[in-house]
Amino acid sequence: GSGDTVDACPLIGTRRRVGHTMSVLKVLTAAFGCLAVAHQADASSVVVLGGDPHGSLVSISISDVGNLTVHSEWLRERCVSPLSVDQETFQLLRNPHEYDAPLVAEANISGGNTLGVTYTDGHVSEFSVSEIAAELEG
Image (cartoon, rainbow, N blue to C red; front, side, top):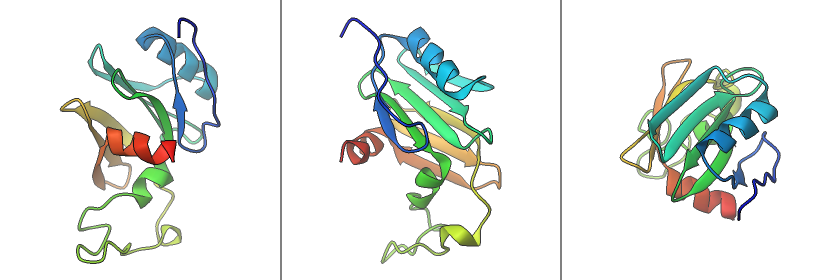
């Protein structure tokens, strides 16, 4: 639509629709206070880290998908790297309570649809933004 809308709790994955990149930054600033990190691969994608503590929320804005906000633990639990899950059964190798709360140190969009995430403990994950959006849609 022509106006900006926000519908969601920033602590869980939610979908937000806003008019343009500057609106995304305004909405995120209002939701999370200050924005310390904003990566913009091009005019159609922006990734912003926020939350309290900083790095606990990742907000993504991509023109084809819309605007998404997910918690860092939600992302980490969905990592399918060999360091995170058994590659045959996809069972988690460690339960979330067996490691410190994952905080995101850096995140960016590459190839238009891949979210790359580096956590403060050095773990690196990659996610399909369209798959994240589909899961959030339910």
